[in-house]
Length: 127
Image (cartoon, rainbow, N blue to C red; front, side, top):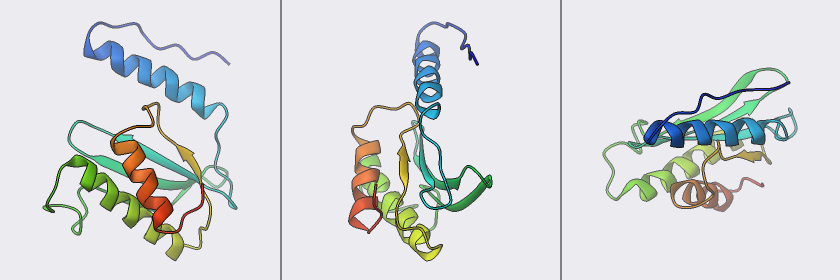
């Protein structure tokens, strides 16, 4: 099954390239009830993480930079990403999830994406 992404210019080209990378990753990565998928969505303003069971099509846990405990906190966006990672790990553990498959969403595993993943690991999620 072929997926096409329109070629664009400038910043739109970067988003199109990230979309192609995400499609390529999603061919290989899928969440199961035993190991759901931890999806990271990064924007210029913030970061969001969800733990998804792809077979059932349900979101088991989620956290965002807009949550009350994270919003308005001190620090830069990497600090916010660490807080979101710890929060999503805490909520996933409460939902009975011990291990996840990491889906970086077409983004490079660096900066805020890595900070979120490291914080989730420190909070007890296994990747």
